[in-house]
Length: 303
Image (cartoon, rainbow, N blue to C red; front, side):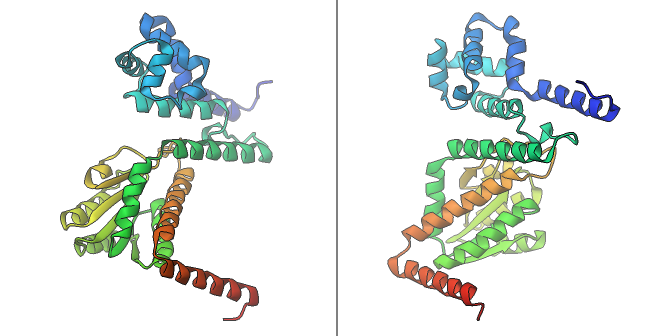
């Protein structure tokens, strides 16, 4: 039954319009009649199993469709995508929208349990996308940079500042001098004082934050190793030696990022865990002693 509340009807119409604009599955369906015969083969392969298509590599999708790889790329461009990877990301987002798991699909008419389910489902779907697409060789390079560093410096503004501060409280446990700057002036001062042997981690989900890019550029010019933790193929990556692309399904243009921040925190957890495992036994022993001491304080309440 349709709602008689004009505000609710307007919201539903806006949601429907946004889904038709952003939902790649709908775009592909609408484009079918005008596609070339070979492009239509790619479209039909995707529509038969969209979820599987998000996991395919370019060569796999071409083979499954019985066409060449350039044909797949041409198809991607014909459905408003900038290449194959962009098509895979938009397809995954469409699946999330289709399952009513995005924040866009939440409205004031939803019951509490519906909001709970939608947010959890969307976040779990998005984290699984991050795990599937995380570049492990780049993670390895970041670990090696940390292991060889004489100091670490994490920078970030806004929501990304939370990730930088989380990293600061983790890495000192493993014998590395670690700092976090979440103020514009502190970032620029710290970057200007860095040199060889120092590692700067620039955290920015958009990768477009001017001040973060500026500080990263200064650090790189002074010989520091620069690492990006970002959610997009962005300008920040051009100033970094190592790029950790932590791409989620979240539309950060519409609201403050949540799952993107959680995903970045998970990457920090991965880095700190691997670094801890690779430290010398005596350093790992110090960490275990510290943890036992903290556990004892928590248990007794006595400092």
